[in-house]
Length: 436
Image 1 (cartoon, rainbow, N blue to C red):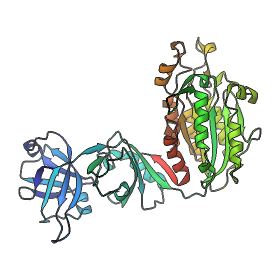
Image 2 (image 1 turned 180 degrees about the vertical axis):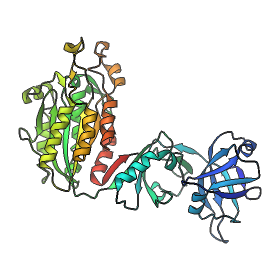
Image 3 (image 1 turned 90 degrees about the vertical axis):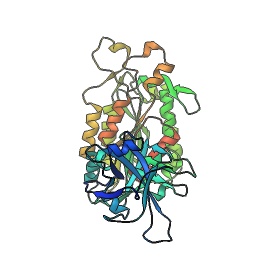
Image 4 (image 1 turned 45 degrees about the vertical axis):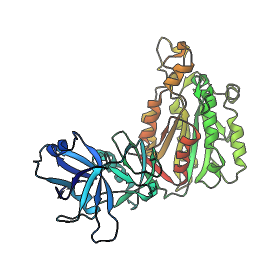
């Protein structure tokens, strides 16, 4: 790595800041001298206070400052300087070298190690100040390090532990990992409640018969088969054995709503024995055209709100005090506005309650979180289904599903496979993930 700035030619001076960021600031002239025209990332090497120990290495974002005069000075974010033990007037030898490789993260999960008395306030502050607190923050992963070894220091907030990142850096190499404004950030908060009471809500409306659900092995199934596959994954033994799910119910909706599990009994069943899993899986076999007809599901309309209201009523009636209330919605999100000239050809979404607005109300009134699992998407529809079905009633509405989950601090999945849903299992088993 070639040296861009070093203590034999520049002074490293702290600059007063409001937020801790791994940043140094250089005049635009000095940036141009080393062939840079915009912000970039590098590695700050700092020698030890006394001979013997090896030098320390830190990632830095090098930011051009057009207001700075070329005075042979490099300014460092003061909070960052204090975090790494570099004080004003420090005479230790240092260099800033070009970065070995830079990886922009698509996803990251962070965990605050100091317990907060008001988690909601912490989340609100992170969301409001994300661009100052989190965007363009960076970490250095060296060959001998693991993700679990790194952390994200915060000014007046201790630090965040890094739980997971995507993509993972290549093994046995050095890389700088960067949070960008496009990175999906989730805050992990360990559970303080004793368990989870869950209602799984499955879309059984007519659009779910369209064959555009793509499996992981390349097969194409109906959306209803896809929902059943996702539900089977969700109901693996790990959900019952050794998890925090305390009570469970499954319902299916179209125009109306029916119980799927426990069958013909509107309540939440306490999960106390693993053999109950066989009963639950047996009930999911009803997720077929014949099974839904036998249940008495009217499939002409799509009423997502009716499904969520029914689930919320079950949770409010049967939840165990101290448990978290959770809805998992499996749907294509497809909706059809009542009253158009093509009404008879497709489904109609009941508009008495906007699903996203209702979700927001359920979260506010009953502290219910809703996770959504999208079955198919518009691109898959156009790949596998005849053009005559490219109509509003048939087009998956993943935007609506994302709104429902985001309004309730829930998670949204658009690839309902085992790998994606493992995030939901982890969330249920250990803590809660809040999108930032």
